[in-house]
Image 1 (cartoon, rainbow, N blue to C red):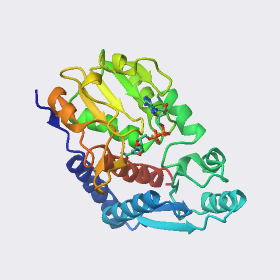
Image 2: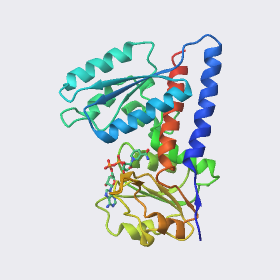
Image 3: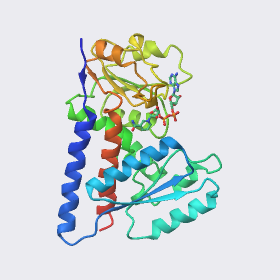
Length: 283
Ligand code: NAD
């Protein structure tokens, strides 16, 4: 079997284009454009690249972005004071603290300080709680992007065995919730799981979000499975790759999301959607 490649770059582009058209129609009616505030604390090189991608996507979609580049010496109180200011600012629709933050800043305090209607990363207690209850909310971007890819390809989740490798609040856990709400039977595999490959091999839908390069090989993939690779790693040659060994997934899976060009562009596309949702909720 040769897997069908799910082209997240093309799907994400279509979504961003529809966001741009929606924003144009708001602006044509005399409204201001949506505005996203990004907090970039410290000098983590991967974070700087991600923030650049977000700024570019915002510019293309017609969203104003304001990046607050904050030195590592800033205190937690400084960050919380800035979030408080942005919460009150009616010209700001979304607030996104780029994670990870430096170790002296408690990300839980930062994320939960954001007004839920402006929490475009969908990580606050309020939005994660509504996700658990399967109620409308700002959904975490990467998990929402994964579900959008499955939907776009017409992959039915109901009744399927899904295995999610990873249980982070940012990625693994919300994907498990979304798949459960879509009526899949979901198994979580994490770093303490015994014989993870045996569980993974049962999956009709296998989501790899472990942050471990090429962890998922032939032994983990059932023939005909849908394999979604969330991981992002930079190889020694500078190229990006994921948690899944691509040649193995291409050989065994029915569908596969490549890295780059799979889940990554969908994360950005879902952020654009969340910015517009947050903007509309201000009216
Ligand atoms: P994390 O480190 O917070 O969580 C990793 C999870 O994987 C943990 O729950 C851990 O228990 C599990 N895990 C680790 N090693 C494992 C192993 N050997 N076997 C089974 N489970 C294992 O990471 P995260 O923030 O959830 O991100 C995961 C990956 O996704 C990273 O590579 C990250 O760069 C990537 N990511 C990609 C996007 C995107 O847009 N494509 C967005 C966010 C994160």
